[in-house]
Image 1: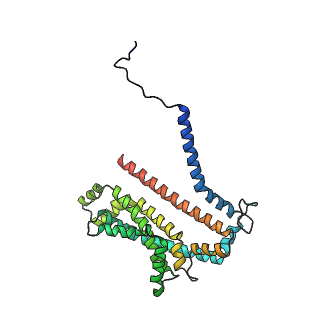
Image 2: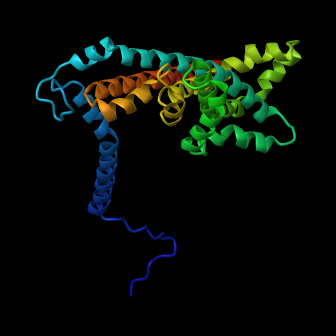
Image 3: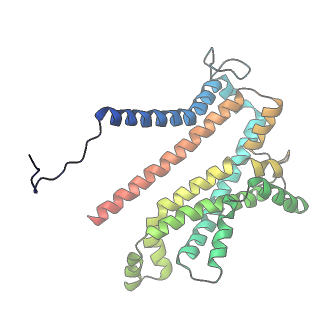
Length: 285
């Protein structure tokens, strides 16, 4: 009778290669389906924007850029676009400054009610925009803030600040405080140490928050629908009106340009983050 030796170790049973490969193929197939589900509508919109027909058509029979030309020559679309850009740039500046200061206070500060302040700052991400829109309309209407830059700036800043708080807070938490203490020990003031040591390190987080704030303002539709009027109308409000009364491929063309703008901004942020990480790696070496 043959008995196994004491020193012999039992080898784990190997799974059949066919079962492993089938599982991998199933996972890849599922991932491709999810990717198709996410990218498919974008592809359809892009193809609709380059059609020649005077109505929404997919697939287009003849490729043409005439709807892009009509968009740039349409007075109403251009007015709504420039108004949205002005609101978005103003919102980016205000929300970046407010969100950065709030992040410094929330990450480094110790004060009563800190958790409540953080919850209030992030609440626009949780509260439905329709609730915020109704409240802002009832508050803005008696003050004459409907349909003007000031009203939109206040409303969109409230909606955009949470994005800046999240990104800048994450950058501050990853920052090494020893570097700031070293600058203070060398004689730098608190303000000088922040601008010369802390700010360059968290700049990618601030830039990311600024981009998110710009996109949150430029793409916002619900609140804009309530606080717009004929004098001040955003591009998203113009979307709603044309979908109801003038459904043409111009809508697809504008949507395509909005997608391209978002991709360009996100690519720029990614490049800035890589550049910052490369510099930090060189400093460590």
